[in-house]
Structures are given as C-alpha cells and as structure tokens.
Image (cartoon, rainbow, N blue to C red; front, side, top):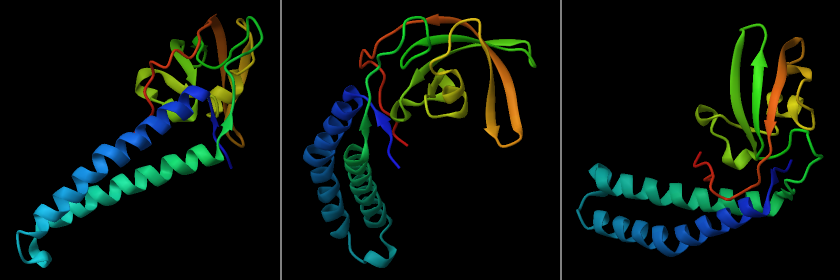
Length: 167
C-alpha cells in the first residue's frame, strides 16, 4: 500500500524529518538526561514523560521516512473543468438539502474540520475527475451510499500553504 503524495508533500516531510533530527531529538535527549538526574526512576514522572516524548519523536521520524519511501508521487494536473487535486469544490447533498465547500488534498494534508478531504476518501474517490453539474453516488461501504451533486469547481494549484497533518 502506498499513499499518493505530491512533490510538495515529500519536501514538507523531509523538512519535518530534518527539524526533528536536528532540533527536537537533541532537546528530547537533554530532557531525558535532566529527568534522569532527579533520582529514583521508578517514581520519576518527569523521566517517564521525557522518554515518552523522545519515543514519540522517533516514531514520527520513522513514520515520515516510511511514507516517503513508499509514496507514489502524483502531479496535481487534471483535465480542464473536472475535479482535481487542490481544487475547491462546492457540493450539494440532496438528502440533507445542504451545500458544502471542500478542497481535495492528498492524505497527508487532510483536515475534515477545515474542509480538506482526501482524494482517497470515499467522497474524494467519487468526485475526482468528475465535472460540475454531475451527481455521483458516494459509496461509504458496500450497500451504504449517498448522492452528491458537484455544483462548482474552482481550480487551484498546490501552493504549499497547507500544512501536513500531525496525526
């Protein structure tokens, strides 16, 4: 399994890895060293917390390195007038009689609260490559789906302003 990421995603991950190795890692090691000096490690909360933060940082570094290693690099190019990566899309949900504006992004920049949805999500897969005016069925899981109408597409490029997720 791989994630579809852009060149900008890869660059942002490399920058985060570099920051975590050169800045965060030394600070975490120093925090562990200081906490260790407080005495009995079995009841030393500061030591346990420092170790936890150090391990979390190392885990994030490994995660990002694995993402880069297994990524499929994609371009945000797409056919004129159809939904593509980084486009702002106005959707209408007829069952709820509600309209929503979303931006289609890579899995690394997802933030549903801000309307950033993954191209690999059920909604993203359903609308990707479609045109304004089309109504598509979004299959959540086998046997469960809902209709959505694409009302407008506002083309956009990957301007690198969207941060990568910290999950």
